[in-house]
Length: 176
Length: 176
Image (cartoon, rainbow over all chains, first blue to last red):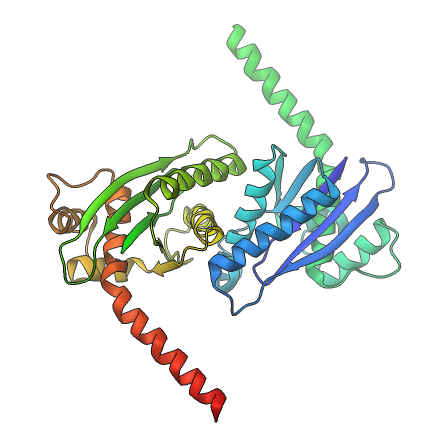
């Protein structure tokens, strides 16, 4: 499974592609950041993010896109820009028919470090170890994008089983 | 000036096209709502909003798109969806090179009713009167979209003068 993780943001949108399956060593395929100038108009920044995400989708052809689920409770000053950047990433993926998975920051932290309250340094260290990199990816947004992709690969089997169970239950309900 | 007003929302995205200039009677060119099913996946809803906005842009060819500025303080439960829908509207406009204007809800209310704290009924009544309609546009999201377009037409001259003054000041600063 090849997953593009997106840590959404207007100024820095982290992107990272990871390939692998749960229970096997994972491989980093690419990592980077889509940046937009803080003094540009919001509409133009969203267009730049769209172009950046499209390039990553074209180049790396992921099967799934995992995006950080944005909560309105956190970082009130930046949350609107984060929500808008995440919308562009989801739009680009869904327009191509790619499944979009959302994971909360604490799900991602718990998946890669074992603790939902891990800090940036811990996430960077675990991403470096899990992907067997020479050093932590910089900036933190890039490491977070890789952590999202890893989280998705590890959580997907459980989510699939859950979805199958729900679907089975629903189909049984219909035949009753 | 022909303006497309967008009252962003995932379930109901109000759209309204108004033509005119400040100080002259205004004309409603079109009004409607782009709807997406609440049980659809978020990515698919954003794609549906993109398609809907694109259709409105294709059909009515506005010169400017006015979108409600979303604040994270209001309606915490729906604000993320509103921010995401607004991102799609801004993206569609900016991608075509159309200027995107943002107006706050209180600016819109003050522009069309004289009070920044007007209620939905008051806005509907004033939109009906200003555009010489037979009855208030329904749902309220459609009326709000028209109010945004009206607000933009009336505020644009002042905003242009301000931008000109800022640009003049900046160019003077450079030649010093």
